[in-house]
Amino acid sequence: MDAEEKQRFAALAKAVADQRDQQAFSVLFDYFAPRLKSWLLRQRMPATEAEELVQEVMIVLWHKAGLYDPARSSLSTWLFRIARNRRIDLQRRARARVLDEDDPTLQPAAEIGADEAVANDDRDAHVRAAVSQLPEEQREMLRAAFFLGQSHSEIAEATGVPLGTVKSRIRLAFGKLKKVLDAETA
Image (cartoon, rainbow, N blue to C red; front, side):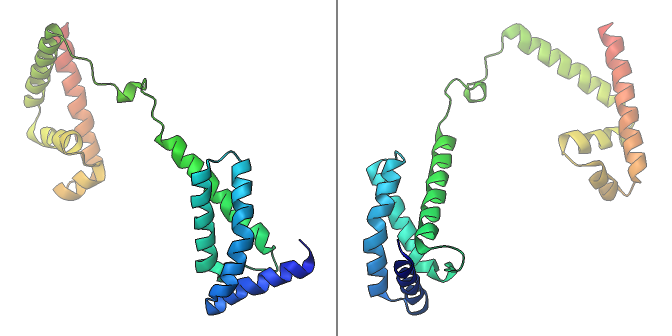
């Protein structure tokens, strides 16, 4: 592409940007669309996807021709860069959609056996009993932190208790729970 042709394309892009000149757009479309499609096909993109992507690039030209700066690059470079970026975005989205069927996070949880269910129930009963032995203020702090998911700062704000006191009560509660639970398992 020679300098004269570059200037002509820049002028046509300006006409599209400033006046929404359909004839100028048509000239640009007729020149660049086949070249963009050919380039995308050489990049091993399926023909239908290449056609769609060319349409997207040309829509960008129609709507955003005002963003094109002939001082920074030729119109050809600008359009091919848009096509390249869109192609990369498509590839990323396609990769993100591929699911590995063997991924453990996609597998259903294994059924627990009856003995494990009984052991879990026993453990839960021991923990509940140990929590019930805690002083009320420590029980409330644990409930807010672990069952309601509140941060220590949120607990302090909600209860009007200083942050350091909230932390101390939770730490004391854990210490007492550990002693009670360790004594039961020994």
